[in-house]
Amino acid sequence: MAGTANLILNILFALFPLLFLLCSKDLLHSVRKLGLGVVCSLSIVLCMLNPFHIIPGYILDLRTIPLLIAILYGGYISGALASSTLYLFRFYLGGEGVWNVLIVYGAVIVLLFLLVPIYQEWNEGKKVISSTYIALMTSLLVVINTHFREGLPLDVLNTLTVYVVLHGFTAFIAIASMEAWRARDKEGRRVYV
Image 1 (cartoon, rainbow, N blue to C red):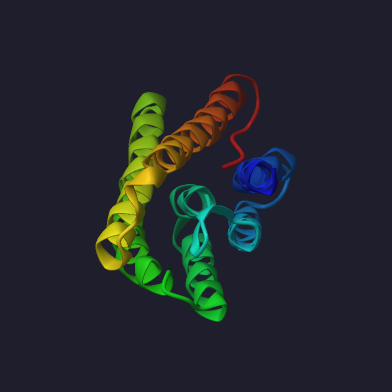
Image 2: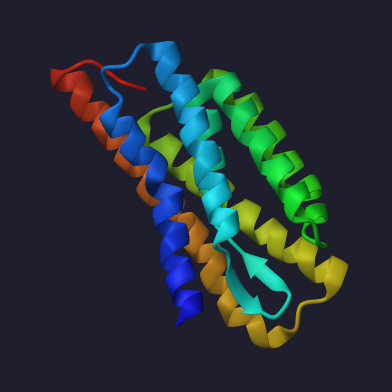
């Protein structure tokens, strides 16, 4: 039961930045972007503090979602803050998973920073699909890297499949919601991200 509770907590923590975006539409643009970086950093830490365990010694979380939101919607400063928090807190926690963060998240962070200038020009569908794909690939790379570095037993394959799909689904919900709010605000009110 604790694993399921932590899984639900991770989903809520990963989607927490959406609440900030809904409540911060009256803030100045630069303050809102910095605030998004702070909220996403907090969300990353909360996800990492409440991981779900697949087997003893192997923990997973959904920190990719707030990282993705911070970089693609908050820009370079917000993304740098969230990325730094991810690295610093992971090093603080220690363990073998540090290598996953260095290898997988290093590549993902570079990719996301390269996408920042063109991401806002994309239409809603392309944003949702690309963000979902990035989240899916990140979680898949974490699983593959962990398997090759440490050798995951095959009996956790179903759990790992759920983890990968959950990453994609949570990213889809987050980005689709944000884009729907932005489209609604463009029609009647100002845009807040």
